[in-house]
Image (cartoon, rainbow, N blue to C red; front, side):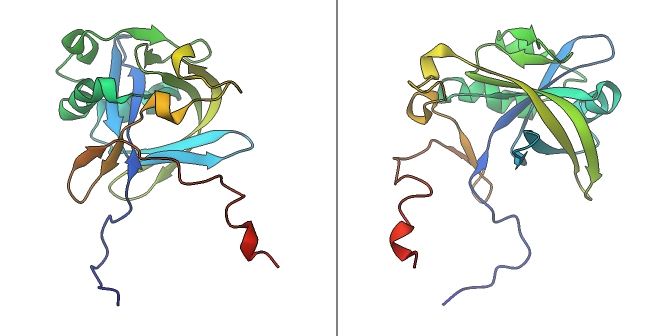
Length: 190
């Protein structure tokens, strides 16, 4: 039997993403967001949803670019801090001691210490109520060599990404691999 819980944000876990932008004075800013993910394979694109009250919102509207840095478990405290304070009153890179590196293809910073950095050009903005979704075309991805597998892809066991679960406001690591996609369900095919 299912229990009705109403219209809630019950979709979990969510990725933790750190969005990088420059403010009008070209000072680097980052914020943590959990409302995001891949939205297209061709062109490669991702979407992030942000409240209008944030400095990151203002920066993306103005610059039309942003980065996404994916933190590992080693940087959970820094990642959490990026979502606790506003860049309007705090220098988050100075406060945490992390390094802001300018993107190669976009004029936005990423977090050097985080193992995956994605550079995006804004291709669409969608007003959604409490949040605005920014769709960014992925123009570059950088991956730290220590988390790359033999095929040149990120190794999830080495990456150790962080997931957010909203119903308990908790951060979680990922568990064991359960099987291969597009394979383990083949025995049901007729």
